[in-house]
Amino acid sequence: MSRKIRAIYKKLFRAFGQQHWWPAKSGFEVILGAILTQNTSWRNVQRALLQLKKSGNFSPAGLKALPLKELSQLIRPAGFYNFKAAYIKEFLKFFFKEYRGSLPKMRLKNKDLLRAQLLSLKGIGPETADSILLYALDKPVFVVDAYTRRILSRHHLIKPQDSYTDIQGLFERSLEQDSKMFNEYHALLVKLAKDYCLKNKPKCQLCPLK
Ligand code: SF4
Image 1 (cartoon, rainbow, N blue to C red):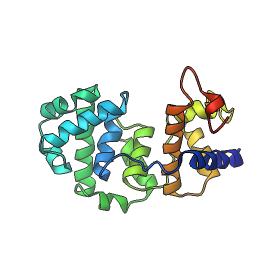
Image 2 (image 1 turned 180 degrees about the horizontal axis):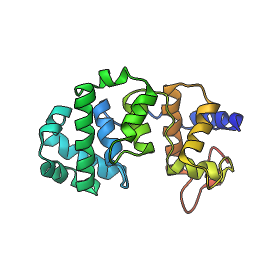
Image 3 (image 1 turned 90 degrees about the horizontal axis):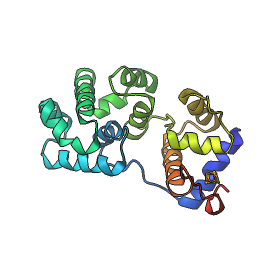
């Protein structure tokens, strides 16, 4: 099993090359993107991020000072905007209380503590917490999403009832604890799912994993 997990990475990296994830200019932008991307397309997230940037409040302190209603209107393109605005506000409250709004300070803490803290916040589930840990804080945590599940189950590497933790454990046991590799591997799986391992009609004949 572990050998297959490593072999998939090699094949995908050879086929697609480096993916340069996460598509953001700062760790703070990664965090906002990770919250906004829940149940919506990345295109809608980009529209919401652009509105935040145009508003001139695109910083932890700027968004903390912004009234909740204004924040929710700015992120409207991402959908579920009232919920997501409340989640962002809750994250910011925690971020300033625990880390004075500083990502470098947050990075000094170990990943288990940070994961527990993030999971205790409203609106942050395992995938969002792990995306923040890996892509904003550079911690070696494997991010599991629906694409990962689809690809692995089609290759009979997981069972339908396997949990998020089971799948994450499979990757983390099979690979070196290397945040750069985890970063790249997740991004490669996303590319594979979007280009070949489509939900309804996988293009197996053209796929690097055929
Ligand atoms: S498209 Fe086919 S070969 Fe490629 S990952 Fe999906 S199931 Fe596997």
